[in-house]
Length: 113
Image (cartoon, rainbow, N blue to C red; front, side):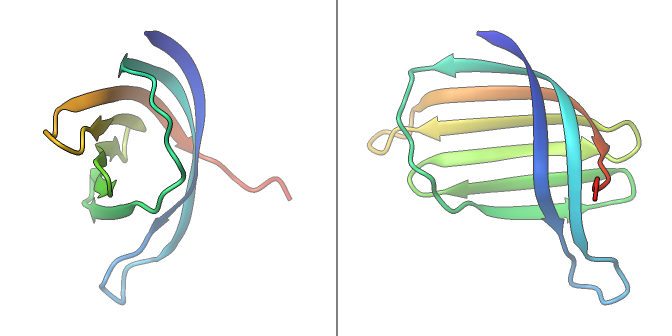
């Protein structure tokens, strides 16, 4: 199923180990599509660990949580293009039971007040 979507990536916190690098919160407004494949599954809110790698051109991210939820993707810092994949795997045999692909165009937002 392919559906248009408007997505706000709220409070993507980017911090680095180097003291000279800026830290803080980046909020993006994104438009694009998501494509879902798999069974409808009931999930509960869970904490996700996220690794972020920042270069001049790309912000890459990789993360997951237990049991079997994973997300990975990248943000092109020049064009605002975002590609990401989230997957849920079965607990017994690690087969993919759900996958969502995101193709988004994002831009930074500013606080309204």
